[in-house]
Image (cartoon, rainbow over all chains, first blue to last red; front, side, top):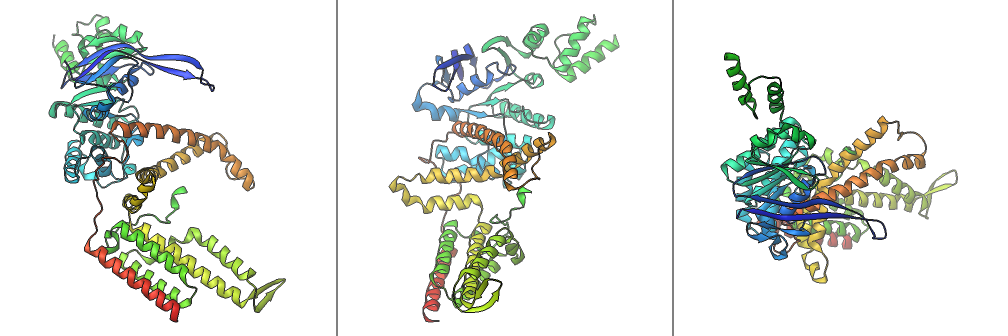
Length: 285
Length: 266
């Protein structure tokens, strides 16, 4: 039994016209089953409209499945009495950094979650300090969020979630609106949480480079999971990924082309260091 | 261009007035405003003005900054004075074309001017020395008893503080939309007032759509962080009265008594 147990979940968006008649049904998630163990780092890949964000909202009980069930740390998301403790167990970081910061000062935003949970004042301050230090934003605690960069805002959002002491954090495309520097900051923070605090991470993204650090990768297409496995197994199927209109990391692509051209290179290669060593090894022969 | 509004924005510095509880300052401002409307008496205004000056000195806000903050309302002020001067009947002291300026008119205009200036500066004093968060917090606590008549006090305060947080973001957005439309040949400058207003419609539509989208995102983010209204909520920065607040209330009582005495006997 894992920390998150998604069991044959189906969710449909129903479009209605002005009179309330059903115009069409979009099946965003179609019979997805997915199991995450505590402490794992999971990446869910897919291009726009593949249903990955809809699936993510199920983990936080923002959406409740129409068919199937989602069990978070032993609690069923369909049970309304458990909604608050599910949201505390599984925190969520969203895409747009501006639209998820509630406080007018950084520290107030981080305190928002614990305030809602009814944590005593003294402990709120402890939690705020601790989580801001974790993401390296403590010096900015008195600043207005409007004065921060995109990457810094996302780190504040992460701190806000950590302050609720979750066991699991869902990142819903946290880097989609950031520049490369901000992207690196956020991914580094997410990995640190997984390594140091042993928090389960579910990273939803369409940047392949961010997925290489995951323990397991799931690829979604039209509401279903079409590929899954370790980064090595998923990224070695370059042709299949391309058929789902996804890229592989640049390094992997280069190795793939070299291999196709007849170079006896090891495959797959996911990181730059790996490629460098492999090329040096090949050069020596 | 939209950001030059300094009226009523928090001025950061350390002072006894900044440290006061926001509730004290809200009540104080209210008392001050009431005191301005109780008597039409020059001595009362002089006394109120010196009280305000004392507050400005304690707050360590540069007086020039306070005066600069009056800029946006100067037009309104002059306009009101002018009308008062023209349309008050009484003893004529000056005739120009068909317009009579009366002694009573001048007097009325002067009183009105003093009252308005003190009114605006007095309320500015509060917003300049209190952060918006503390202000909404204080308002929530002061309106607390209204919960009994089913007024959603917590929700109103939450709405105010979210609105304050999104003002700069939406201003940026307006700027961006206007620039995008300028780049495609939109014209916001020429024509009369009606034409100018009409040219803003294409700016407002995308602005509203984006505001709704942001509201939707924010609501989801708040829910994801366990927000479920004011019930069972604790506060990170609870308000606490301190000895200085007691002193401030005493000063306010003295001030009000003095105003009443001056108004009645001078």
